[in-house]
Image (cartoon, rainbow, N blue to C red; front, side, top):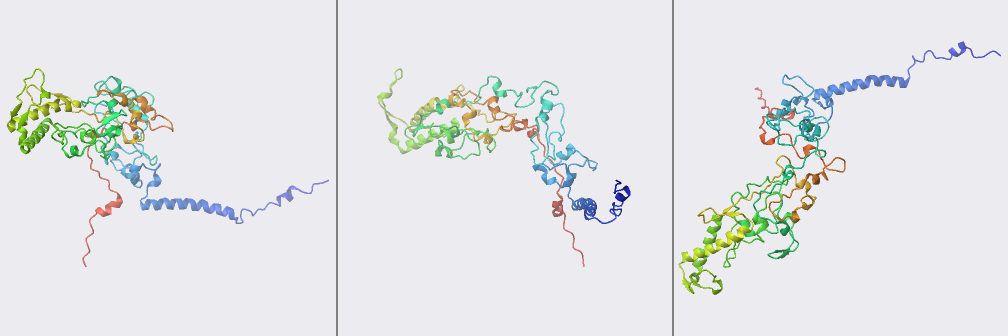
Length: 453
């Protein structure tokens, strides 16, 4: 039987006018292929006319530079005023100085490799360890050998023990302090048993001065000369040296005679002696009967001449004798309890050794106590409760720090920048910035002269 569908009949089913007739979907695609590029071009031209340049950025700027998002030329223009891909160091130094690390370093790296922009709202100081390891993994300097560890790639891997703890060293402080005795639970104070806490003596400068063991009289007296010389800046990073008036006065009294409630000032020996003499002068002027001195038989000492039973002294003699007794008590017992005293040949007053309290133990690194305020002091300074010698260095070792500062999401930051900085900011120079935001320029321009009628 012959087939009813032939090729000719099948061909007649093809609509030869299909592509000539308008088709809605096809027309929409064509219109969009023209409209979208045109709209994008108009959008780019509009932003250009409005001075918006952020569309050309590879990414967002850091928090410090986000105000420059629409001012690419502030960084990406060279000295010849032509646009360049990477900003030159002069673009950075035009706003802030970046002093070098060490004067004898072999080379000075440029700014961009360490402080790379267009990575979003990041901290530019948070550099990768590779930036530091570029030099410190094989440390060399110009004209000599370095005193620092010659090979460090990261804090976690091969950072050496802290320098202060590598070799046996002593605390240079001269104040005699027994931590173990002061942290006893049954410590006897002027008002009974007390339990001292580390914070009773060790606080940052910005902390409130509501100390439990301060003394109002001592606070009202001038501090000894040079007492504040070692104080760090008034922040919360470092610990301020303890002050007698704030931390010691309530327990370590400086009384010198049973006739007086007042204690001597915590000051230089010259001031202390003048205070003692003045108090005795005022007392004998108000009590002249005290010039008749009756010998106390209980104070007769073997080997010393027995004084007459009754003596009538001149005021000056009475003052001199009692001042000498007070001095002997102060210099040989009271002051010596905490301070190191020495007498020069022929001198009547002692020389008090400087306290030498160290406020910054890591001169080449940063440490912020305030960032660690959630931990007890003994968490890191574990040796303090048992230390009996002033010379003990009670700093935590590197293993203690690595307990928290390690790699991984459950640890604190451990990269080099957390404790170290490349730039030696003590050598910074003041700069004269030249960039002005366009929004400020109109305010700086002089007002236009009014037109004459």
